[in-house]
Length: 367
Ligand SMILES: *Cc1c(COP(=O)(O)O)cnc(C)c1O
Image (cartoon, rainbow, N blue to C red; front, side, top):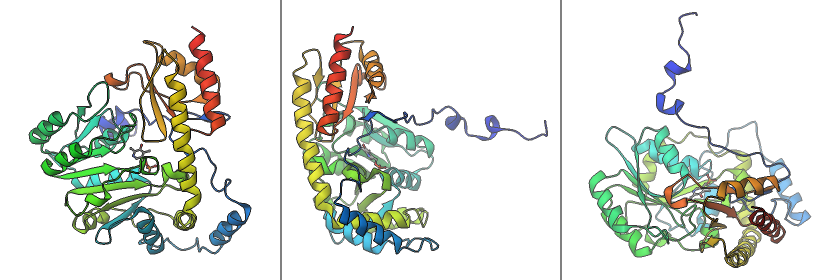
């Protein structure tokens, strides 16, 4: 044509081979596929608080760039997340962006990252975007515990620039053994990132270990707490690491509306904490209900979701039937050998969980 080459020439082959991250349409559905908090924010707040929040937003100067250091928000997050005073904090546009930043900061020829599998899909995806091979070590079949010997052997062999572990793990819901994680912290030559996205439900943390392991970084987010739409993640760790990672953060990555809203929400964090407590209770109830279905297996979970195994060969048909009944869950069958026949369901309100169970029972009886 005009002598210029198109995307098949210029776009990297490893990007062209990727599938776009699938986000199903959710209109009218009971949305139990993305670990969101089911209680609307601000809609679940008392009307006087909603007005106070709106007044706060109306005083912003959106003609100006946001404050790149967000000092008020950082102070509120430090208090709420009990960040040790000698540790540094970097904010991201969701913790996904922080994973991207820290992997960009360590990427290079002959560099690798290590993750346990099945794990959070973004680890492998972002590794790929930044050109880092992601070595995945299988969890133990049955209980999804860390295979510590295999992890330590892989650490010796690969010398990974970063080890990424979700605590509790997504999609399996379990907390890895503390001692096992500490053995990895002791032996890893590079960073160990503990992703505590589900802290509001698990209330278990390595925050108190930051001083002890200089290669430990901790990731938190407000997404699972109930503010997924804000896009705010928090990376915590030693200043010597975070000062470097902060250099590649785009200066205005956390916008003014997010900064003001998150600071306001943390002033009223008791409301979010109370919702997390209700979700934990609902999770335990839903787990017990699923355990009564003899054809299913359900695993215990420290998160706001449950992993369940369907009768052999039926997960995809059951998933389709659930979607047809207006209930979105995640089909994990085919995503990893250990997740054969598995679905993952986010814990919703009592009413949503009831609709999910009813639709699941109809689908199970249907074939
Ligand atoms: C949901 C999830 C996140 C995503 O967090 P954002 O802050 O919304 O980007 C990070 N890590 C794990 C393990 C998750 O499940």
